[in-house]
Length: 334
Image (cartoon, rainbow, N blue to C red; front, side, top):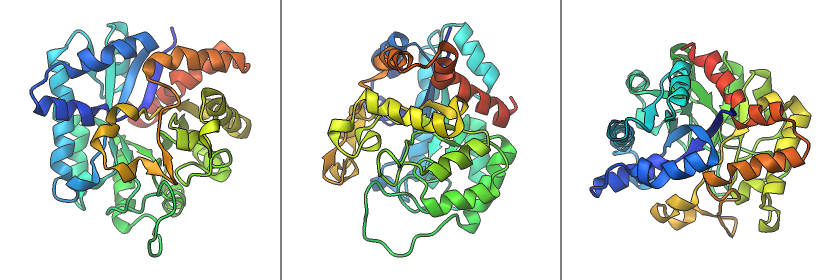
């Protein structure tokens, strides 16, 4: 049975808000049916902090989202499990539960205090996106489209220490949203596999959020994985190009460059959460964002499209989850 992993999903933003309004079992009610229909066994639950809460409330909002996931697991113990290790992921699958792995999407909750990283690790965070598309104490983010700004920076002195400490703990470093300067700084420092949890190929869609061919090769050289993103602006430069076929073109491009061992899914499904964000976050270069893959129920359709493109069962299984499992094993050692 194929182990399907979505390497990036922002559901905790929604779950925490709904719980603040008194709802319970939000994941079981609103998300679980789609996970089951799509065959998803593991979800990387990203902790995303909206601009309006930074810097003062970054730590609090992150902890609220983590608390929400743990509370949901307590309320739906037969269906949901928080996973801190590969053995946890395998246990969840065997028991028919959806496993959730926590990821920080941007190091803002750390502020400039390295000791906070240990706190998040103990709470279950196992992946760290160094930045979202903005500057923080770690480094500079990659904007969705050009903005007026001064000189860009790479990783800071604090950022280097964060990377080294995270790798020592067994936290996977995620380069999605990191700018080019910071990316190449990381390549100099990293000693373990790194990932781009939800990024595509800049050769095929020119957003700076996507990866150059050289960056794709560098990630593969670490034995890392690139999670294919299903948001229209990262799939194609026009909405006419934003469909599953063009999304698979990104898979093809990475496979031709470095092999199928370095491709995963990081669908970055956004439409359910657009109601929460300021409009200019989701309007990039004059385009309105939408999901090319309309929810997790469509993953079997994506698998069929891969098969039609010529991918064999073993390759599809790698893309849908096995490649991410390999990186989890390499870095977590748990």
